[in-house]
Amino acid sequence: MLRRNFAVPFLPSSALKIMKSLFRRCFVAVLAFVSIVMSVNAQTRTATFAITNAQVVTVSGPNLSRATVVVRDGLIEAVGENVKVPADARVIDGSGLIVYPGFFDANTSLGLAAPVAPRPAGQGLPTTPTQSPSNSNYPDGLQPEESAIERLKSGEAQFETNRNAGFTTVLTVSRDGVFNGQSALINLAGDSVSEMIIRAPFAEHFSFTTLRTGQYPTALLGTFSALRQMLLDAQRLQANRLTYDKNPRGMKRPEADKSLDALLPVLSRTMPIVFNANTEIEIIRALDLAKEFNLNAIISGGQEAGKVADRLKAQNVPVLLSLNFPKRTTTASPEADAESLDVLRLRAETPKTAGKLAGAGVKFAFQSGGMTSIGDFATNANKAVENGLTKDAAIRAMTLSAAEIFGVSDRLGSIEKGKIANLTVSRGDILSKDKTITHVFVDGKLFEQKEKPKTPTPTTGGTQPAATASVGGNYSITVEIPGQPLPGTLSLTQQGEILTGNLQTQLATTPIKDGKVTAEGFNFTTTVEFGGSTFDLFVSGKVTGNQISGTMTSPQGAIPFSGTKIP
Image (cartoon, rainbow, N blue to C red; front, side, top):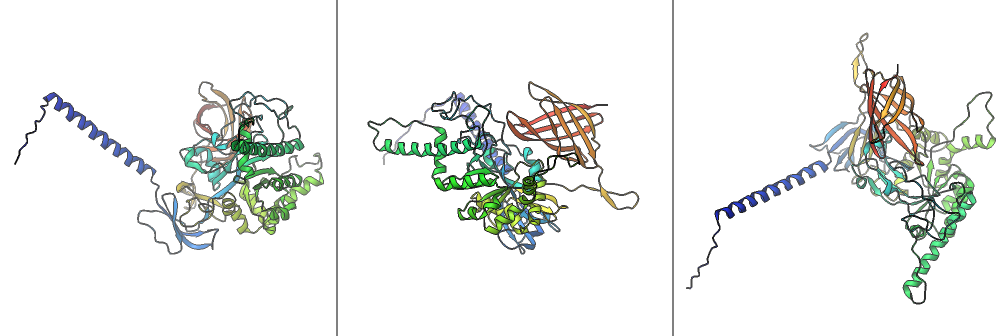
């Protein structure tokens, strides 16, 4: 038997120390990595909740009178009257509460940053590119490639007012230009844009409007003609490319055009086109164009959609129906000019539109339509019920019908096992005046609106809501914009828990909306116009003596402010 001797290389003690040190460092690094991964997984795991003894409006099925809804890892794990509560669940007693699917707002501009300054453009529809990094041959306002996803900002604080009203999901798109661009369907929670997105892009949006003075189109007829011509140009470009790809020799290479490329999915029906149309003639023109080019069309706004309900049904065109009902804009006084018969008729007929669409079998979803107070959404939905719409159809228009139109009914819009846990919980019927939203779940994350704590009543021994802070008055404030502090005046008028007033800066004076005073301070929303865009600014703060401080949260982020009460 042969025995082989292998020489073991000699390692100096210094080398051994180095190897041991390296081993220890690698081992520590591995432990650190595992610790980080476990920490991240722990942070991303969603808590488990069980809402018990609640009335549940499933929308897709029968209402449940005393049921349990279990939420785990962002999904609805179970729903029913005999569901067992998991041992690890946080229990929410739903006695006296009603659980709805999270509400949709079917057309907004929530979460979008202000647009960049428009680029210069020549007269008419240019045939050569304007000075821009884009390869579009069309000016700003006629660029369908603009995308909401590119301007979407994360941050949950900006959506607080809408969530407090029960909304969990919105379709968001720019309101600028003839082409508003491509919309995105988002949830109103998430630490990043990617967490918020449900579907993007969803559709191309087109408005019957005009561009700036001196820039084509300057009339509504020109707007319609511009859209039709661009669809024809896109068809022609696509045909030329197919011919060139087959045999390029002897043929001029088709030019690239980002704007026309964006219309190709519209022409192929893989992307819907949403026409922002309110009047009967606008809706008819949109339907004519949809028929001519075989488009997958949706009407948004639709104040007079009831007049063409039969045609909408025949062409299978749904409606994102605005609940921003027309109001009288002049002061109701003997000196005010009398309103025209057409205006009076529009105000009277608009709340009846939903009932007419439902009667004709047209699928529709509700949208806020740019209303100044999101609280009007449920109020006007109830007006639609008072004018011929059933209550079940109204709830469906806020939930499952919207999900069906947006192509996400397999994951949203109703309370069913396996769907995303978007839930709205209220004390009282959601369409009643005295309802209170108590809990909202978005992607399984709980946003709880705690009811006011009770304190003993000295005279009777009963209970009453805890006292609110005293915040009324005029304050000289400074908004701490980095590198450019913005001075202003904040005027607060307090009536119990209700807060009104305005915010004044050198940019504008804007009224307070949805103002509330709590035991800790105050919060409100105001609408700001900047850079040609309109967005909501959520303001929260507190008053200590004569000092005021807080934050203003916009789609771009949160900015602190502070100031002093004006004597």
